[in-house]
Length: 321
Image (cartoon, rainbow, N blue to C red; front, side, top):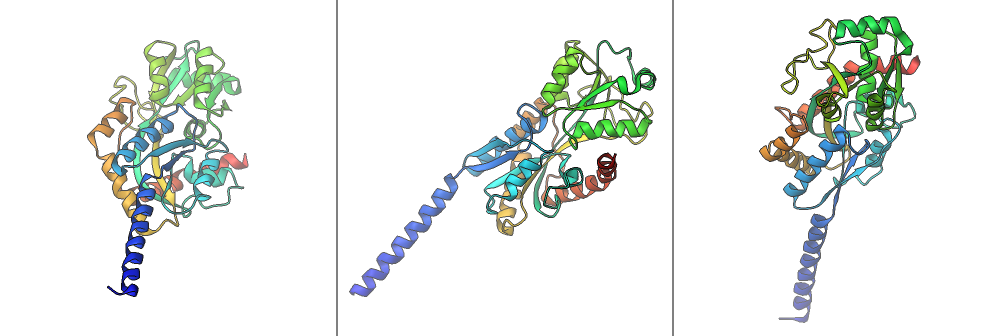
C-alpha cells in the first residue's frame, strides 16, 4: 500500500471514529424538559412522568427543570434561548397561547415561535370551597357570592394560569364579583384554602382530592362539560346552569420552531410512543390525568389554535381592566 493510500485509509478511519464518538456523545447528552411551573402541581407531575417515559424511549437522560415566573414566560424564554437542536423541550399548559396578551413584554409569538411535538394530557378541575362557606351546591354558592361580592377571596395562580382564567370565566359567565388572589404556586393557595384565608378555588383533583376525601374542603362541581369518572356524584358547572362553561387543563410538549424537521419528526414519534404506552397511561391515570386519543403534533397544533381563539378575548379583557 502506498504512503498516500495508507494515510487516506487512516484518515477515513479516524473520521469515522470521530463521527461515531460524536453520535455516542450526543446520545448520552441529557435532554432538558423545561417545566414553566412550580414543583408539585399538575403540569409538573405530568412533565416528570413524560420526561421519565421519554428517557426510556430515547435511551438517554431527560431531565425536568422547573423555570418559574411571569405567567410561564420565563420557562418559554429559556426554550427559545436554547440552541434549536431538539435537545430542549417545554411542557406547557393552558396559559401558553395567551401569555403574550397578558405579558406584552414577552418578545415572541407563542404560536409561531414554538413547534408542538405532542398533545400530551388533560384533566378537569374541581370547584371547591372552605368548609365554613355556607354553600352545599352551586345555586346556594351563587346566592352567597351575590350577597358577599368582593369580600369573597378566590385563590389562583398568576394571571394567565388555568385556575386564574377559570375564575375570570366564572365571574363573566354569572355576572359575579369576587376577589381573585394570585399566588406564585398553587400549593400555597391550597394551603390557604384549608386554613380559611381563601373561600374558594377551582383547582385540579391532583391538588384537591385528598382534601375533599378527608373533609377539609367541600367540592361542589367540576369544570368540564360532562361528569367525571373520578367524581361521579359531582355535577358539572354546565349541568347546573353555567352555560358554556368548560375548563380543562391540558399539556402540550413544545420544541423550538427552528429545530430541523427531521429532528421534530423523530421527537414526535418518541412522544407518541410514550403517550400510547399503557404503563405511562396508567401512571398518568393514577394522578387523575387522561391522555388524548390523538397525541400527534398536528392534533396539538389544532388544539392550540382552538384554545387561542377561545381564551384570547378573555385575556384581553383581563389586561385592560
